[in-house]
Length: 105
Image (tube, rainbow, N blue to C red):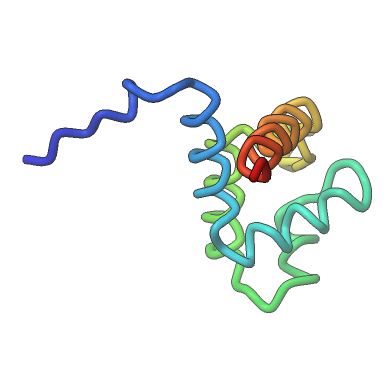
């Protein structure tokens, strides 16, 4: 069995890795772009914009929620998705620091 040692790395590096994994599919990036347009899209509204079936969009929404990049609010029978801007800003700040550190020649 493989011995995973993620816990031995800096929490910032773990967070960057987790979010990067969530962003590793173009559909998830497209969903984030859609959600950035306005607050609270339903899954059905996202399906209407993308060339993907509802179960596929639901899967990608789940991955984005698990990474903390989006939130869901229940309104009656509707699930409303939105960008988690606090999480997004944390990620982009950490990534900016990584890029700056790697740019030193």
